[in-house]
Image (cartoon, rainbow, N blue to C red; front, side):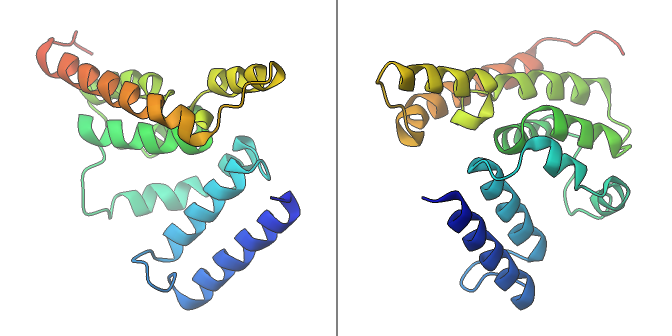
Length: 177
């Protein structure tokens, strides 16, 4: 796929979603449309993580996060946030974002955030710079590792790693903060 056409397609899809308030046939609002567009542009290399994190309005996001219908401070929320954020724009921007929200996180949630944000890297190729380097080196040697080939191994390994990490956090007493 030509990068220019991919960017144009993404722009048109996001513009349509913003104009309609959602994508036809999907239960995704304007925020979701924008996020999916940003993730797509990042995944095809049209923008980098620094560009995306620079475009985030942190004060508005902090205010909006207090209105969510679920608690962002629990260990399960840290796991989901780490997986989604880290496999879309890297692990530094999502962690920085979460810590900037002033959620008064407890020590157990901070331990969970640290643990889960390091365990998520094998889920997708873009989840870790090491994955990207390995895929590029393999390509230089004539070995093509695509999204589905990596995901076939990466998803089960990451889920198992996250399950062990979650069990570890549940069973082992954490040191006091």
